Image (spheres, rainbow, N blue to C red):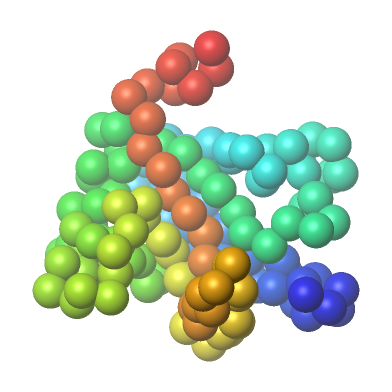
Amino acid sequence: MEKTLLRKLQLAELGMAKKFVAFCDEHDLRYYMLSGTFLGAVRHKGFIPWDDDMDFGMPREDYDRLLEMCQNKKVQFEAHNWFVDHADLNHYRYILRIEDPSITLQRSFAENDEISSAWIDILKYRSLFSCII
C-alpha cells in the first residue's frame, strides 16, 4: 500500500479508535490495546509504520455488553460480526469489527482479493489478567 494512502488509513482508524474509547468510557466498558496497536503505541509513539489496522481487547463481560448494545443498535458506530449480522451471510467473522464504510480498501491475500471498510478489531478475553500473563 502506498505510504500516503496507508497514513490516511491509519489516521481514519485513529479517529474511529477515539470514538470507540469515548463510547467505552461513557458506558464503563473496559478495553485495552493489543498486538501491533500496543507495540506501536509504546515503541513508535503511534502506529507501527507498516501496520494497517488496530486491535483492542475487552474482558468477556464487557465485550458481551458491547455486543448486546451493537445487536440492539445502541452504538454510534458501525459494528459487524456474525452475531450482530447473522442474517447477512457475508459477515463470517466472530471478531467484532468497528467499521467506517466511507473508507474502502482492497486487500490481496494469496489468491483472494477482499474489498472492505477501514476497521478496528475488538477481541474478547476471559479476564485482563489472562492477557498479561
